[in-house]
Length: 299
Image 1 (tube, rainbow, N blue to C red):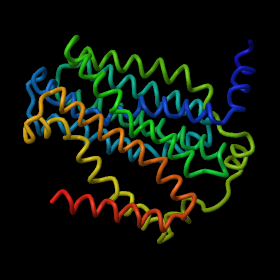
Image 2: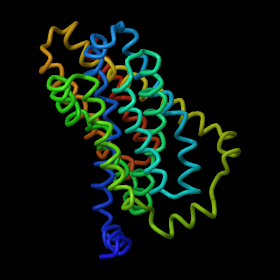
Image 3: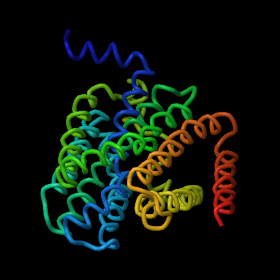
């Protein structure tokens, strides 16, 4: 079968695209399992607990700042090429982090290279889902993003197993190679619906300059920062906190990371559906009410 024909047959089933998007984001979301790597890296490289958190922080910064560039790449190169570039960068970041023995190179390899890779690839499953599900955009995007959130459910135990068996740096190399292979195989299938892609290429809506001049943009940006800051901070220290403060065993702390990921992943399609039904303002307010209630209970 001609590969282009095969791809066309698959992308005519939009639900298959969602499944592929979940798998891709599950690879990218391995960053949420970083807390599993921290103590083994501290022992292997002779670094402190504060230093072991820096690659994760730099990763998130590189992830955030590379996303606008990824949007431009998608418009110019298409979703498939953008995803492939991102996948190669992600895998290279993990592989390089496993090969080096110094702290600064670790921060650059994992934080900068890996973070940029996720920033490039992250938006592709979202863009594809949104183009194929105009009738249920919130739900479709939430399902695609669920792979990123639920990733620790699979990757944290897998990483723990690889670390115990092969050592932390070999485990990082193995994961990096796997990410490149999986994303390279799946990237040809993730393409936006043709009419949507053509509309995006023609432009429409606000220009970047107009968007940056809108009060709504800054309001949404601030809400997003508030909504993600606490969660991303907690994710980066879940395993060490469980072991050192709560007194959990290594397997129990890994389970805690996995449970965090499951609930994180499930919340995405749920709130996507809420958005479809109630609209942006109501769903955002509901989200913040739940966050505040959770923070209050934990006091």
